[in-house]
Image 1 (tube, helix red, strand yellow):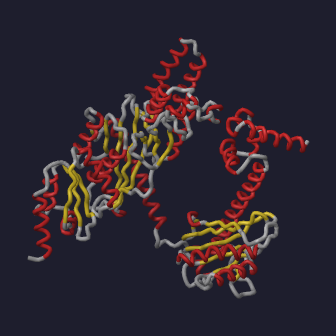
Image 2: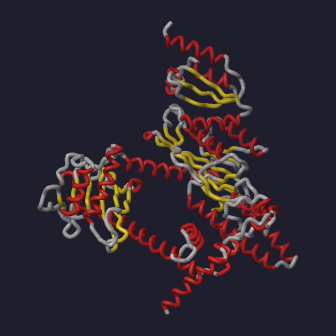
Length: 623
């Protein structure tokens, strides 16, 4: 018997002995790499179905079984656990034959921290410590809108102090600026009970879940009670909160008169690109409060029902909120699995519908249109990213400069200073004619005395530092280097390249500002490119970007120096205190105009007096 037949017999024997309970199964190849990960209500029955002699089996499954040499299982207590475990394993192992949900970026969540007087903040990392997470938010603008509403409606702390009872009773803390501008009740000094704060957090949870009607009703009752108790300031504050919530909820599109929580799922596929987009619209209390989507790849060999099933399962494996009902644009592969999972989480039956006519079908068509639109954007992004697509300007530049290779990666250097002070150098990178900002670099020039401008020495230092690093790391090497300046700057750059043993590894040119003339190494006369040519415009574009970046850096450097020298000139103000003041007030002018009591709370009485006396003396001297 051949080795392949022996392996198959061994595998079939193992499959026949698998447990009949619920769990996750994993097919592995001869290198112990994951081929496929799935879940099943009955592990033995599900895995055996892959090995049946059936001509109707998909080619993908036949290939999978042919490559599999082992199957491993993890038994779980229920299908809900299996669903979440399957999702986590697929993300970690990235099996070849699973649908690949594109997850190369993380989406933010709003976290309500599990601690006394919980903080509320955004995070991209979920820690299972009892904290509550709301999201993920694919649209950061929607996230910021929610956070802005929370900050304007509720008084919650933003500090990271340990607010357990003992430090508060010992009086370890002082109130901060947030307390004085009435953004926080001051729980750090015992001004607010934990019960009162938790009530506020419960109201925030209602807002995050989209239950604005219930929240308005709760606040209205509290406002009525405060009015009856003649607490008119509190009643006015609650009234203002209700108005802000009304304004916030008016921006949400009403899709049904029923106050129902509903999730709407749709799918759009592009078989030519081997990709699909799954989208979910979130309806809370009859209003659309947001949407999110995922791009799925490696979909060929799977029908739409399986792809949408995978997306819906992935969505509910990550969310903490489960709706009253679910609508889908197409029948799922195993709808009962989703329904059982949601019903277990909700504690009651959650129906799943595929609308065929009427308003609900119209609503699903809107969701599907959004999925198609996002898929179109993804296809356009693929087209733009295509490596075979070379812009005409790059081809023209290669011809005009008589280069041996296409200048796909170009780097340009520029120097900026003000009278020789705060000298900086910029290095910008263009890839395929477009800025690649993640590769931009900046250099503070150290080898030129402050106050003595020397563009040639500055350029030499910047080029030397840049290509010493590239030489040590062996790339990425540019296809063309552009130096902003004429023969002098180009000569300095060549000198630096020779010092780093990188001269001759790539072409380098200088571009003079006055007449837009190109200089080559060793040539005393400039080379002229047609003024309206695409190649000259490309060089000008990268030169202008290098100049913009350099000027921006130089201004920041100068502002930082002036800012530091201003505050550090005050007796008793060191770097840490200076940072504290700038964080609290944002500028030196606001520090100067700050209220004495706020300054005292921030830095203490003695230092607050020094600061005010310093600025008072400045005012007197100017007058």
